[in-house]
Amino acid sequence: MKENIVIMGAAGRDFHNFNVYFRDNAAYNVVAFTATQIPNIHGRKYPAELAGAQYPEGIPILAEDKLPDIISDEQIDTVVFSYSDVPHIRVMAMASLVNACGANFMLLGTDKTMLKAKVPVISVCAVRTGCGKSQTTRRIADILRKAGKKVVAIRHPMPYGDLAKQAVQRFADYNDLKKHKCTIEEREEYEPHIDRGVVVYAGVDYGKILEQAQQEADIILWDGGNNDTPFYQPDLEIVVADPLRVGDELTYYPGHTNLFRAQAVVINKVDSAAREDVDELRDNIRFTNPDAVIIEAASPLTLEEPGRILSKRVLVIEDGPTLTHGESQTGAGVVAAMKYGAVELVDPRPFAVGTIADTFEKYPDIPALLPAMGYGDQQIKDLEQTINACECDLVVSATPIDLAKLVDINKPMIRVGYELQEIGSPNLEELLKEYTT
Image 1 (cartoon, one colour):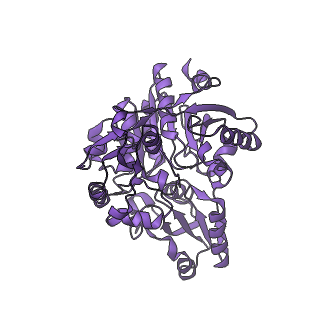
Image 2 (tube, one colour):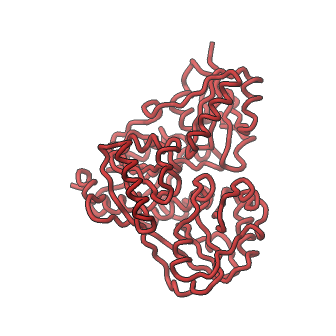
Image 3 (cartoon, helix red, strand yellow):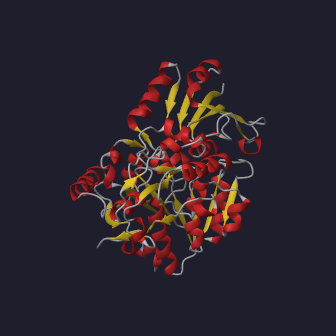
């Protein structure tokens, strides 16, 4: 008899695990996915076009809080945990619940879920959301391209629209962003690559994505999401860690897995962290993975007319995932506001509407900052209304994109950028020498 399976996910890793491990496996019957973290995913279906011959009706995506009922009603044998940036204690709490309901609890291993490419793969992952993967990936792409290499970035999935149409997505210019109706979260990851002339792939079926992407690449750059493990077998595995959240590298899943696997660890934000925290993080890395190369790096700010911030009451906007499930209490916008003399960080909560208000309710520990949430048209509208209602002198936006292109902001705004800058040696150019000569 087939084993009945539920896959717990957040519209990314869960679909990949299904595609590579369960889709064509006659030993299993995947009854449902459950959804968390991402709004408007539950109540939909993983489409038949992607689910394969065993699932002609597709597979329902249900709310995670219904899991005990699903296990009971559908006689579930095993629940497979398949999403990222979760405290270890939360993972085991879910395991305990699943076991109490009578089912097995499974975590698939990396070898079971990584696909092998025909060209070299360099992966950039992290121990937490918001450590600085994006600027690390950009820095690596610049080094490789300077050496004449054709780099293709494959981004961790963010498929929040029509899943069948999003099976394989290729982004080479801004028209592709419009074509695929990208959310703010997607744009934040894709636009900086496009601006550098780097083609980006993403989507749902990462086997098909790989088949297409490796045909135009000398090197594939796996651009990880959250603190998830790579979908492809890396030839070089780089992991980014955050001294502003020292200790999290040991207590979050699967970031801890990344730390064990890393060939090199970038300690980012050393310009913002206390030296004792950097040293403690270095000790934790050495304890976990004594063979890893450790690179220290800063993420210096770039902004025009910083004097505009002086003595202003500012609304700081940071990227959404870093503030929500990433649980970060600060970001580049806050650093810029404090450095250049803002008199107040205005709390957006009293002005939040709709899904933005819902976000603050779901994540009550977000400080006086606005997450740039934009998982759909309605949420983008809610974001615009919240910004425009906020009583402040200036908006300080630290998202990697120009929000003014997506929302009509009725007050002055200044953008904050940041790039990776290694400190001393070892550095990324030295680490990548094998791939640039």
